[in-house]
Length: 408
Image (cartoon, rainbow, N blue to C red):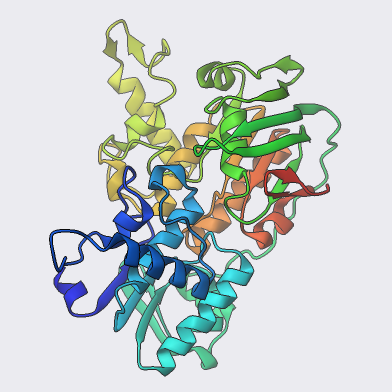
């Protein structure tokens, strides 16, 4: 609160929003009221004005749990802008914005700088660094490893400073004969949390040894599609088959047991349990297996042995397998989710924004892991708002727009 009073605003990478409250209520949280009642009407108008001004479309009356991750991030940006700050700190603010929205935001930030506003822009996206910054400070392992003027550097030099070595910028995918359909979706329809149609007669297929990329701006049905495929959301119609078996009405557990892996876009709240340890998160889906349980008791020695192997195999940096995963970086948390999901050699891998908020080293690792599983014959559905990621990894590409597939 003192920082806010001093004119310092912060847009966090991981959202600081109350799910059961509306957009307006979240924006007003922490502000001092001049009377007994909060100025909801004027606040909603100001939110709409900011929304239009910066291309950050949100519904002020919607509850946070009802809106997409991308819309939630827009709320965080509006929440900071609402306070007319002098210093604005942004941590990965563009991760789910469209290119047009990013350009609009950058133009606004540059305009703010000209008017005397100081901006600290924290990002792993080197294109953004080069486009929007005047100076760059590079951090690695909590230490400053470089300070340079943006005009005196380039992306390759910054990437080397970030990871401490030359970075792999392209991958040799190799040729894999993709002929057998593993996933088939025919005319699938589903609603979102606001009870509106989010998927409109979606049809697609994913073959063994293939990466099918689904591109699009966040909030166009991507979350609903992933949740339908893993059994977390009911369909209104249509059919989903996995390796020839109808899984449309099956539970999430039943679908996973058939060989489906899922890395959700929200690794903190859907992909893991933050209070649980590294080892516990690595066996979340295997607690009831005979290997890790003895009647009513867990086989802790076997769990530890298994966890240590995955930590080694997937290069997870953690002080111990017993620390809560909330203490780890976003990249290492994503590695834990990937390790758990891919360790069973799944038939189908569904990944949703797998590199959101990760540094260039972690992104490189995630991409290599997906390519390796493609070579093993897995069918991979890559849902991403990062067009460069879609173009570099996918064998085929389709676009999801307003709940409809736009070409293949």
